[in-house]
Amino acid sequence: MTQIHYVPLFRRARAKQTPYGKRRALALSRQTLVVPRISGRNVSVQFTQMSIGGDKVLASASSRVLLKVGWKGSRKSLPASYLTGLMAGIRAKEKGVKTAVFYIGFQRFVRGSRLMAVAKGVIDAGIEVAADPEALPPEERITGEHISAYAKSLLESGREVYLSRFSGLAKNGFKPEEYPKHFETVRRKILQVKVEKNE
Image 1: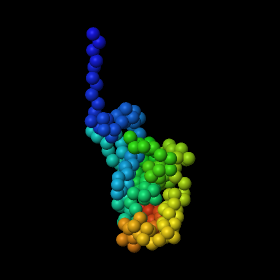
Image 2 (image 1 turned 90 degrees about the vertical axis):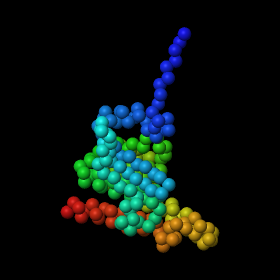
Image 3 (image 1 turned 60 degrees about the vertical axis):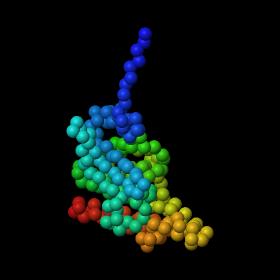
Image 4 (image 1 turned 180 degrees about the vertical axis):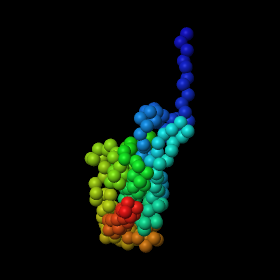
């Protein structure tokens, strides 16, 4: 009679939260990982190194920190994802990180997505990350031109529809049609902090 052996899976593997096979391969490679996470309100990015005692965080940034440099837009948008990746990359570079592996776990890979915007921000900070240039979002999406165009089209339809869609931003006194200009202002501030620290 053939016996069937049951091999239990770890809880996080069953919940599709941790791909242990990939993590084992990355742990053996001893490479630094860029780990992005996007929630319903924020974007967070960590540079980590795996060890027996647990993952060690070398540098990190959250889109909440963008508020300190004047960010008024959505903290979970594509532009915010890029800026968070840029800030985390700058912090990691200051800690001596030169190369890293972009690790998204079970998160779905989509070309031009917010996850890829994080990767673009990290790359622009000077960290070498293997990524297909065609998978990264174009500059016009990174700066929020698509959001600006959508806001302008809603304004033409009626101010009520516009205010209902962007009520959260309107409360902060921010006009979404000004996303590209505001984005560039905040990006310059982040890069200026990098310049001042290097002087």
